[in-house]
Length: 191
Image 1 (cartoon, helix red, strand yellow):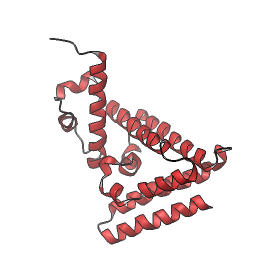
Image 2 (image 1 turned 90 degrees about the vertical axis):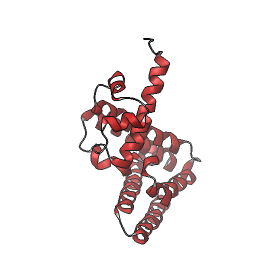
Image 3 (image 1 turned 45 degrees about the vertical axis):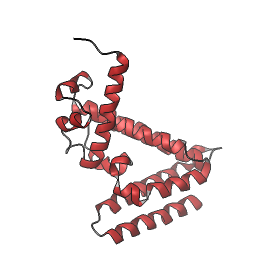
Image 4 (image 1 turned 180 degrees about the vertical axis):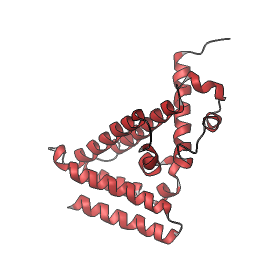
């Protein structure tokens, strides 16, 4: 039996992480078994342990990957407040609400991350600090730390608004939550 190259193994691991990220954000961490995650990746259950020590190991890798992607996407927006305004509008969009599998891991998984292992929380914390740093740099490039409270307010407002909008069965009220969230977030940016 031929051994796979380290590049093939890394690509397969990343494929599992990406598929698990979509599944976790749709069905939750607890609602996603290893068999389903591996099937989503086009692999058998037996391949799982060649890439991860445990499901907790996978969860930490997925959370780190997902939050890292969000940091990259934010960093690629136009500089300054213009980019933040675009971020707010994209974040609190109906498309983001309706497609959690493609969106922010915080809005989809925050309650579960709070119950996860230390490694998952560490990966989430590292990524969240990077998101906050990116927001701070856009708010106050000459003194980013001075914008920390505003960055925290903005990010928590976005996440909470999206979580509430997704939880509502009344679509009109859900749309209103998104619209109010945009207005409130933009007022935080204007202050």
